[in-house]
Amino acid sequence: MIKRIHPAALLILGSSFLFASMGALIKMVSPDLGNPMVVFFRNAFGLLALTPWVWRLRTEGLRSDHLGLHLIRDGTGLAAMACFFYAIPRLDLANAMLLNYSAPLFIPFIAWIWLKERIAPTVALAVPVGFTGLLMILKPTVAMTPPALIGLLSGFLAAIAMVGIRRMAGVEPPLRTVFYFSLFSTLVSGLALPWGWQTPRGWHWLALLGIGGLAAAAQMLLTMAYNRAPAGQTGVYTYLAVAFGAIYGWALWGERPDAWSLLGMGLVIAAAMWASRLPYPISAPPQRELARH
Image (tube, rainbow, N blue to C red):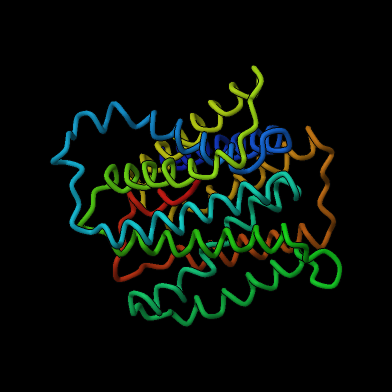
């Protein structure tokens, strides 16, 4: 008899598909509009999508006593997004997504430095395996290009943002965290528009709206999933976004990873999932993945 799939796994499956679809749209539109435009409209449309929930909170529900933590989380989260979006049109879509999804390999060390969380011996063993996989993908002697390094930087910065969310666990609700990030990212990314503006054509507007809408919907599904099951039980499904990205890359751009890249992907996914499934002293499952783009 086939075992019933957990509802949280189905939610994460849907979220992974939406994140990969967002990446495909970014890859389509970025060559015409540039990174500043895509980053701004992703955040602006995402902020617009939050309006009904924010309106119900009013001013009192949005007031925070932890603005310093929000600035760290929002600044690193926006920088991670900019690096990720920069890498997408310059790398195979699956590789760009996987480099961003390498964040769990960095989280234990950042949490150790920032939150004084002990690194479990099993995590210490998993991380070198993951970085070996990254080297197989990056191929240091051949293809460690600036876009690849920037893609890897997006994973490191996303890890800092995720630890920042964990640091706010218990003192900031998820909606307030997402609102501050969306507001900060929209305002800051908007500063670059006078130098990076490219007038969108008709289909560009549809793509930009789709990027913001897909990101908001994917985050919502992911948050609902972690409200229903621990990340350690369902987190492996988040890496289906890489598989969906590979399918998009093959179908739309003829991208085919070589054997070393495929082996490296397997090592990174296995190591990252092992590192992320272990419990931490401070955690907030419903908020954990809100740093995802």
